[in-house]
Every structure is written in C-alpha cells, then in structure tokens.
Length: 540
Image (cartoon, rainbow, N blue to C red; front, side):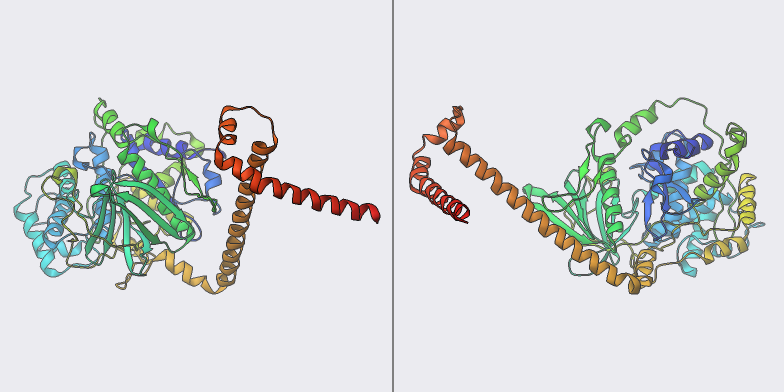
C-alpha cells in the first residue's frame, strides 16, 4: 500500500481499538526539523513524510470534546483520560493546587483502586509522578483524598470524575504553540473547544470565542487573527512563530479547530486561503465531520461496550495498555507487525511522549469559561490567574526511536498487558527534553538555534528573493491594471459599440469634457510623434 492515504492508517488503528467515536482523534508526527504535523487523511502518507521509513507517528486527541465525561462509550472516555493525564504530567493542563490534588487522586483511584494499608505504605503517593514537579505537602494531600474521599469508586467512575474536573479548568484542551507578541514577549497560544486562548505567565490574558473569530491568516512567520467583539468592534491580533513552518502548522490547526467547533454541518466547510493581492499563500480545507455531527452520530451508537484492559499503575507513571488480541487476527499477516508498532507506540505516546511544543503570543483581557458555566461568569471580567506557577509546558516531541529488538520487546509487553518497569520508564524519559523555567521555545527553537549558523546566509537570501518577488508582483499587477484602464478608454472613445452602459458613460458632461479637452489633444500628439518617427525611418 505504497500510495495509501492517511485515512487508511487511521481507520486501521480505530478498527483495531474498536473505536467508533474516532473523530476526536488524529495522528501526529514530527518531521526531521522537529516540526509537528497532523497526518492529513486525504493525502498519501508517503508524500507527507519528509523522513525515511520507518515512520514514527502518534495517536492522540486532536479535538478535545467540550464535555468529555458525556462521551457515549467508555473506551473513548478512557483514551481521552489518558490524553488529559499526559497533559497534566507535561504541564499543559495547569491548575490550582487544590484541583491538582483532586485530579491526581482520581488517577490513583482509577489505576490502583481503593487504599489498602497492606499494599500502600506511608508516603506511597510520592512514588508516582503526576505533575512536572510537586511538593511533599501536595503528595500528602493526594494521599488523604485517595484514602478518605474516593473509596469504592470503580476505574470508570474515577475516570469520569477526572474528566468532569478537568473540563472545568482554564487550560483544558490546550495544545500550545510557541509564538511571540508584537512586543517580543513570550506567550502560549492555543485553540480549545471554546475558542482561541493566549496564556502568559500564570494568567490567561486573552480569550476569543469561536463565533467571534472571523478570519485566520499567516504570512511567513506572522500569524493574524481577525475577530469581532462587543458592539461590532473589530480587532486584529498579530503573533510571530519561530519558523514559517511552525506558523503554517499553527494556521492549519486554527482553521481545523474553528471548522470543527463552530460550524453546524460539514457541508458548510470551505477552502481557506492565506494569500492576498501581493503574496501567494497556502490553501487548506478541513476534511471531516464537525462537533455537532459527531455528537449526533455518537448518540446513535447501539452495541455492547468493547472490553478495556487497563494496566495497573506503576511508580513514576502508569503504563496503560489497551489490548484487543482477537481483533488483531483480522489484520493481514504481512502488516501485522507494523500494526503492532503503529498502534502500541502511538497509543502509548498518549502517556509517555509529548509532541506538543510550548508557545508565545499577544495579550488582551477576557475570560474563558466552558458552556456549562458561561452563564456564571461574563467573558469580559479580565485576566484570570490559573495557577500559582507560570505556564511552562514540557517539550518532548515523540517517542525516542529505539533499537529493533527493544521495540519488539516493548510491543510484546504492551500486548500482554504487562506494565513497564521503573528503569524502563526512566530510560524512555531520559531522551525527552523539557522546557526550562525561562520559557524557551523548546525543540522548535533549539533546533533553530543549532542550525542558525549555517542557515543565516540562506535565510537572508530567501528574504531578498521574497522581497524581489513581491516587488515584481506589484509591478505586474500595476501594469495589468493600467492596461485594462487603457483598453476600456479606447473602447469608450474609439469604438462604435452601442451598449447601454457605454452609451450612458459617453453622454455624461464629464466624459465629453475629458474627451475634447484631454483625449483628443493627446491622440493628436501621439499621431504627430508616430508620423515623425515614421519619416525618420523612411529617410534612413
């Protein structure tokens, strides 16, 4: 299947997982330049890959459900639970200490069950890593909640409660992009189920609802958002991405999220262009169903819930496993090993590997609230503090490639539902870079800095070429307009075409004055010059 499209691979994975509510998920990969991309389902897989096979891809949540706890099937909720748990670990889901303790306790209850003094000694919660960093006080609070408040909750109930708690947080659904605002200040820009969000420091400094956003556009590294707020006040926000490729990815993510959450039907989706009069841009069209259609389709699902094989939590982090052994036999033998690797490596990336990078952007003030609580708080209340710490998500990019034998071992262990050891967890994380306290760009900026010396001259040449092309394009457009005007003038003055609108123009006093006072003398002057040139040529 050399020419297989992205849809083929995605359907194969969803079939293996027995996943029907699949529209919330996508496949992400990272190119050799450390730039993230979503696999486009309408295009050939081979043509989208810049690297050489074997390709490394990750299954993850692409469109966060507005109400994840209300998803129809448990397997969908479980996959979203894994994604949000990973967001919490990598610092993308930021929250107050009290909320953090409750979320971690739900994870603990879902994966190790009720507190048992015989199995869980004093300080047992400190052996698990739920956040990028946390204090002993927070660990004790997590253990207290787990011991006293969550007794008797099944994994499904704990996961549902976790999702209900997570969806109320300001940073729920944030998949950050690195940008800078017009003043050069770093910020984190993201698209959520409810709109466009900008985070700076420990505050959400801007929020635009999807129905307020009118246009998304990019040119090179510059990203623009056009929006209409109260009293038809139009605003234009401008951001600068680390690279043109990162800016294009940001733009495509915005186009897809706006179409998914804002539109009523997929038939309303239109091709979006980033070009203007003087710059040739990109064209992109979201392919897929919109959120309303997905929810309507989910309500029609009537089947026995598929079995979910949860793995127990192990120190450092949980190593969950979803296995459907009998279903794998339906996959042709020649592709069976590839399916093992694609699904297990991709699915486990919901837990271990981050492929979201941090972000930077502009500031204004607005409030972010899900629909379930939008009536309680008005969107104009100003900036909101979302945590005691600065928003600084970690920056891992994808599973670190492993040797062939170790990959086979990892896959076989996951298929059998066996948890990873602590040493394996630490080894797998050793190659995972993290974002420093200073808020650097992460992998995107680091790779840019590493190649800065060799690429400086090339980038300058590219900028000069772009400027020259822009000037040439402007000249061509100007010449074209002048030619069209001259042609129209000749038709008006010299032709005998008896068309209504031409006749009306000729009869106006202004046109008659122009014709006799300016055009006729100009025509005689040109005729005189042409005769003079002709005589010179004849005499020679």
